[in-house]
Length: 436
Image (cartoon, rainbow, N blue to C red; front, side, top):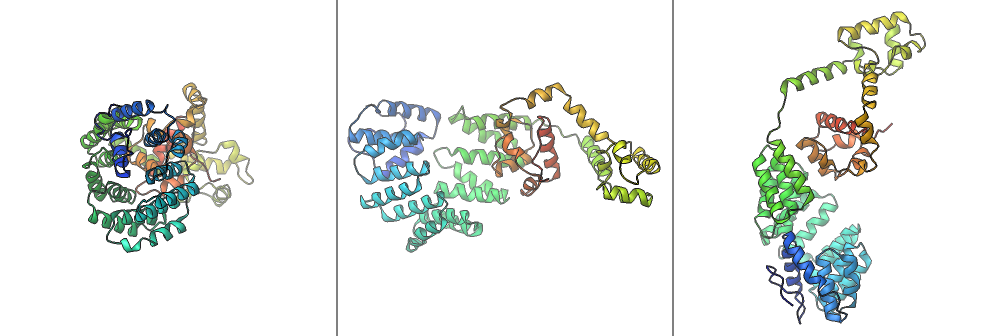
């Protein structure tokens, strides 16, 4: 069998590659779409064999390609070896069969796999399965490798992050990097932790170290591009996305993001328009208590839970007059106040009705696939999009299940971004979830 070009490691040979070679092969396969395609062709050519070793090799190949359900029976049929049981454990873990994965890891240890690696992979498996106590117990059993094994500190940091011990996790990531400065996963997760915590400068520096190590680390490039765009470094953001597209030309998120970054270079901020909008919002938020009103009018409005001028725009004359003790005199008082500001009763309700009657909006709202539309496809500012990314909100459906409070709880996300998202949703006839 001809060896896959550029991969330099042939999976399908008389002797099974070592686990280290399999890991290296996996990195090389995923370094580009072209490598994935060539390797997939090689795997397909070896699927038909029913012999034990070729079946195991094919199972490993399918696992590398992420085709875990197809890989499982092939791996199970292969001859016993530490490589078989380790790959089988990783496959079972991806399939969320955590108990079976732990059993396979134990078999790998019995077959000669290094005890430290097995224990750390058990810890990772328990962590993925949500059993943090068991993961902590496995990590504790490896404590004599403190300040010796970079992988020990990396796995310890991942556990601490899952426990919410972020400062401790950062310290362990840094220890791992002191031991092995090119530990790419430790670099990435340290950068990502700083990113989530709002320390953009530190995150950028560590992401830069990640992408300096081959092969291409797509997630690091995309996250770095978001940070560059966030601080207005659009050329650097474009360069990061360009590197992703160079090796993965059909990457959907990178393609959309590249268009977004390019459009950001020519975005125009209308300062005067924003000032006018801000002044209007301030007027609508003016408390009723700031105006001279009769005691009767003031009491009626308070009982109706009308606190601001904006609240008055959401109620009609008829609704006011239908309230007990609210008469024509009180109505004239209210209308005089609104007239001074160029406003009128029921104005907001009329605006909403006009929007609801727009044919194009009705057509969009009736689209059955609307809720699956990705948030990357709607026009949002960098700040708003970054918040949604941190909250792991990917579709309009997920966004509509989110409340104002959840969005405002995201670091650096304010009322301006909230209003922007609400406006974008309203364009599709949607809204955020209400707590009422």
